[in-house]
Image 1 (tube, rainbow, N blue to C red):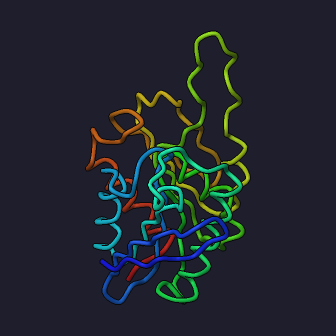
Image 2: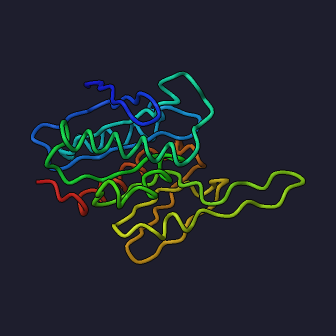
Length: 206
């Protein structure tokens, strides 16, 4: 693994590169709002992708690198993500078809920036479709529009008991429902199987 510090408009990000031998493609993944790149689902997907011949970059947003747990505003997350992907495309992941993605908040960032990053597909792990209702408050709007705006193939891997709901499938958007909740810890094999099958179709590794 190689760690690369990348300057963005809102601070320094770090990309953790897991290089495949003679890679056929690249997968860039972001973390959740309060977690890091060591989340079990991100680790499992990284291992599966590298075994398929796809290099993986796990990206730490600047607020996490700086030691903060509270996420930056969406526009800052998006700007930092675009800067990181552009840097990786010009260097370590240059010339490779690239799939963007992440878990939870990171999946939302990848969806919102799919066109700007030139992603060939978007992988969403535990997409937070509908924030749970808080006592005494109205339910917040859902985030379905972020998924619907993506014009490349999308895979969503969602726990059947996810408190953020189950996103709907649609043309070009697959949904794999597996055992567990938002953490995606309960069914590692189901997660890996879904991601491997989809990545092979999008990146077509040799």
